[in-house]
Length: 81
Ligand SMILES: [Zn+2]
Image 1 (cartoon, rainbow, N blue to C red):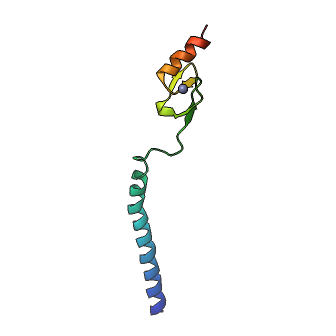
Image 2 (image 1 turned 120 degrees about the horizontal axis):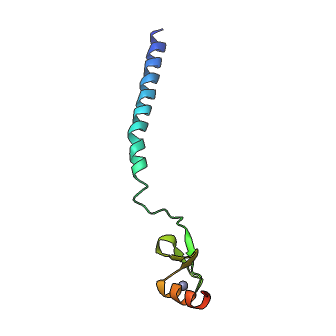
Image 3 (image 1 turned 180 degrees about the vertical axis):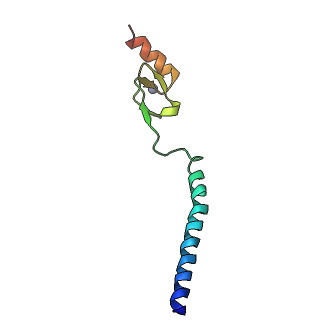
């Protein structure tokens, strides 16, 4: 009986230790990813030249995306009106 008790206590300590380790590790894992920019960022195709630019760098106008303000201007000159 003494040995079984010891094993149960050891198992409980192990489980508690695992749970505590997970609780301590979880916040760090949650904090780690945000600083990195997600690799799969949405890419926008320039309506003027067709080059793909990251969403945050793209210029958007009426649902069209452009690699630069210059291409937005050129495109609108030829396609608006
Ligand atoms: Zn362009």
